[in-house]
Image (tube, one colour):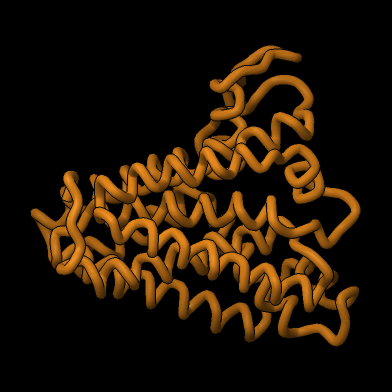
Length: 266
């Protein structure tokens, strides 16, 4: 059955931008009608943290339910698997392709070609294993602390980092969605996204949210600089890698710091 479509050709507005973000970041069977302009793609970045928070909310709800009937470790494993399903493994696949490409080629052309290759190399296997294992350990730790809102905030913060990467770095290729997103982005979009995550962060982890979001942006920037040094810019795969790296790092930080944090929604 084909996915349902929403919106009208040439229509615009917040709901269309939200739908574009939802279409690109999840497996929700929704498609926006009509051609997507660069302005619409760039404008959808403001909703990236919203989509992240929704994904995190689903995972947190699943975890808080599962932990009442099984161990925190098994609940964490199911939640990690559910997160991969909800995103269609898009970001995870981007991480694998990125690591294979950046560390497996002799020059930028080779590295970009490797990133396009559907085959998985040893660098990708190692990165994927580390991603899953560290994520599982961090989520399990958060579940044991009852820190379900940490899952929500980590998912939202990583999407802000992705939006920042789109804005701060040029694309590595001359065409593709990375070029289209970059061409239509406006700094105010990322600023609004950042403000949204700060509000959510203050509600969940208190004043420390500012330091955490700055840390996530620094990590995204370092990843972007590495990519620029290797392939001259960023690609869609690298955006996915930024999301994975920042989300896992944020989960680990929250698992370590949660007893010292405070927020109205904790």
